[in-house]
Length: 479
Image (tube, rainbow, N blue to C red):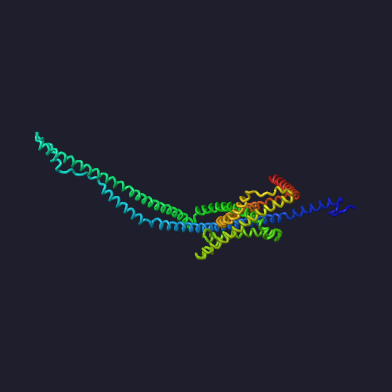
């Protein structure tokens, strides 16, 4: 007898499956109307939920954008205030330095002008006035002697006196001209000093005008920031992005320097603290080397904060000047000690390397290979120099680190706003898909029960045709 178990492999299983499928189709056909309504309702609910979620995400993105704008403008306002404050301090220093010399330059200019006027008055070209009797003597000397030796002698004397007077007047004129030229020559240094004074004054005024233009430009940017203009927000956003990528590049270079510093001191640290001691999966020597490097970076941060170059720790900047100066010297002394320690560790590393090479050569039996070059001091000095300089080079990591921290907030805000906008657009698109998914699911539902629907349509069509023909016949009968 054949089995009708649905899990059996006999011939009854096929009829069972056919029966189950038919019953399922009939059940789906009978529940067609409520199923359609449920599908449509579910799709409408999903559509409304996704639309509400999209609107909520859009609002969150808008609030995040406003928050990013506020933070960006606040940071830009603070940076602009700091720059303007520094420019005013420089302007004040320039005014105190340059304009304080104005009275001295003015006094020097008056003195030079007075000397020039005196020299000019003394260098006036005044030709000697010929004596009034010269014409009369010349007329008397021109009288003919008429052969009288006495008269001729007198006339010769008069002529000689006249010539001597003219020669004397000419010599006096030449002496006066020479003195005038000397006075004019003496005026030249005074002119040069006056020109230098005026040039220095022009340079000082030009420097002040340049700083005034810089302050005007900074004030314009500050006013745009205070007005919360879109132009200021765009400029600050682009500036933050540029600063972020530049700071990342510099920090990457600094990390490379720290890695080199680590490998420079890790090997000798293993000899000091033991190379076979472990904390978890890390060697104690590696941890000690990292601690030294981190302490150096921390001291560099504190030194930069004490110098007021960075502003990562407001508490340090707010310290009294006396305490701040003490902190500068303390952090610098610690850095100097750590740099000296690293230089010693670099020297120890070179010694250990030479010892290992010599030991390896002895173990190989190659005694001739044990040779110490006379130029090994070059590599030793280079390693000691790197060990001493790298800690001070890591001090300047504080500058790009501060820029990275301040710009990271803006970058994260921009990325977060972009992700929220993409999520909102995706939810809206998914909601639009859900609005049409109801019709698609209804059509799929009808495709599953297509056989009963086809029979229903055939029955309805047959019934409609049967009702129309008697009606038509009755109408013909009436006519």
